[in-house]
Length: 220
Ligand SMILES: Cc1cc2nc3c(=O)[nH]c(=O)nc-3n(C[C@H](O)[C@H](O)[C@H](O)COP(=O)(O)O)c2cc1C
Image 1 (cartoon, rainbow, N blue to C red):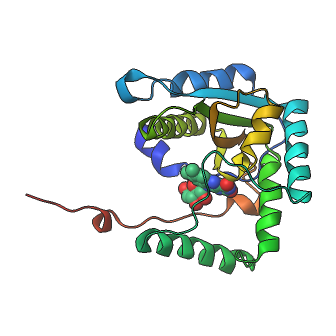
Image 2: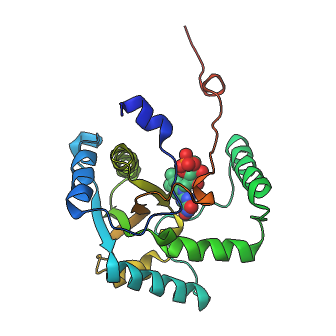
Image 3: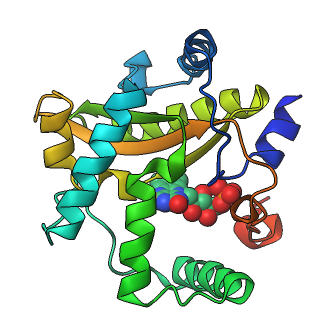
């Protein structure tokens, strides 16, 4: 697969086949992703890969927190308002999804259910957490975003599906404590990882994008 195909055909995968991805292959994915650029080559990324009983135990812990009504403790606050253009795209995503599934995504019960599914990492065999030192500036967060995309592309090039999940960091304080990640770290992203179940309706969803012409201003 060439780079352009890889960028254009990657999509979020939310249903996985049961079997694990071999450890050597997951390491190859990380080995590729580490070639991402970063501010002054600071490489501000730390990675934890969870599988098997460790992943199940964390999922259980997060679901229990949700069900006990615990307040989320994310290191990266959930945005509550958006500028007009971004808000319109989010509304469009939810409208398209509602039309396809009949689910009302503004219903709090639906959000709760979605969180639970996220906390179970969409039943993927692996979950990857990306984190970095909490004292790093937004440039390093930017770098970690580049790393995340490289990781997802390197996975996709090998037939491995991923979905980036802000929800999987909802209980950052408790997750870090559970995983023995120092509390001085900033938990940025969870990513479910596994071989895609291509027959699952959850994977039939295709998102669209604003046209390039809408994004670019030429100044000649
Ligand atoms: C930073 C970030 C956080 C996201 N959080 C979630 C999440 O919590 N749960 C989820 O199912 N998808 C999540 N997504 C996936 C987006 O919904 C998805 O990337 C977007 O709708 C575009 O679809 P595509 O990835 O299939 O191209 C997240 C994506 C990013 C980049």
